[in-house]
Image (tube, rainbow, N blue to C red; front, side, top):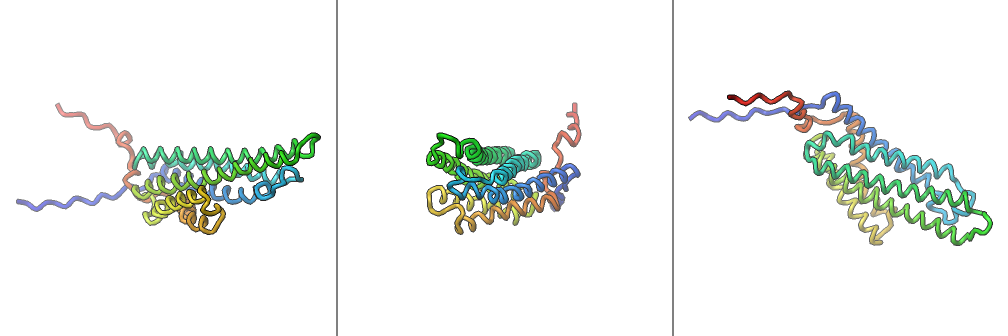
Length: 257
């Protein structure tokens, strides 16, 4: 009886030039989400922090620029999922579709929030100081619109990002090996933590801008930033999912007979 021959080690395929471009575009889009999301809150500060904004002089241009940044954020959010889908679907198409859906939902919620903020600006421009306007009622409506924005900030960047970028994309990247698995673990850990802290905020355990919330969402933020940098600088690691589909390898041989 002859000894069995050990199986040959198969080297995972490396990224093609097209796949490198996909990784670069996805990485840049992830970085755009950072560049647009954090400054947007700064530009929104006058309308979010000042109860009487709708009755005052206002800082409309500043707020409108914040809304513009969130428009870019919503586009970049969806773009990350759409660009990565042809690659990550080879690992698990159902999870990849879930990731695309979560990013679309997150961007939809973000747009609802920015529309509510712009509505406060419109109220201030059209009704503040107008004859017959009830200042108390106008202030109440303005604060209601701000409250809508606050809740969209919780449901979008907190819940949806934790589930989508953290759990779903973290799983796809970990299983496929497209990025270092230690990095992908940040998503698998940070996603559930972001979900937990969002749930705690939802039920009034603490404020979303509090210390506990910041600490628990930090791993998710580091995961998204590191993923953007890695894909932009290096692209995908060698992985079986980078192999071309069978239809791209040429026709299958004809059956004998």
